[in-house]
View 1 (spheres, helix red, strand yellow):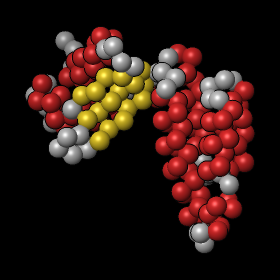
View 2: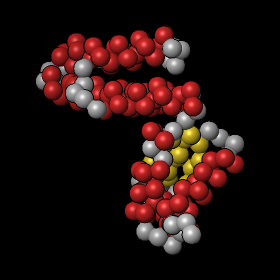
View 3: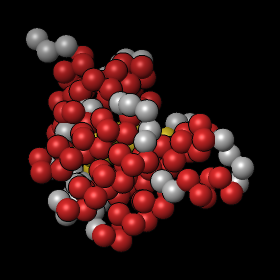
View 4: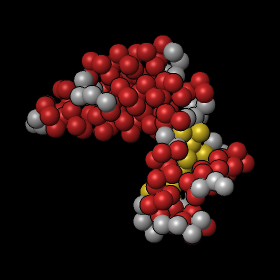
Length: 158
């Protein structure tokens, strides 16, 4: 007999398979009600069963009108996406490493030349220095901006 986590995972995968969009949008509260569980159980399933390593991207908005979007990464996109996540989140942020990664994403035709140039502007220290930000604060902002921008950009490829 399958456990609750398996049932929730199967349900979400079926929704994805039937969806006309490259994603499925659900509400955490409604899912919890459907499966008679607490919302944290839904969070557990999303974190463990719908991770980038497993070929999914999950985005959410909390609050009364909040939602969860689950994107299925295409096989050809899963590897570069994993690489981006690991490269940007695994170690200290280094603009030179990010520029190399952007160059590779462009060479592999995952992003366009223009997209690469736009993302590269985020890594330029001059912008942050002119605003009087410390190197540490600048790196934090660069890291956040790049993560968000790449996530949005790569979603189009799903």
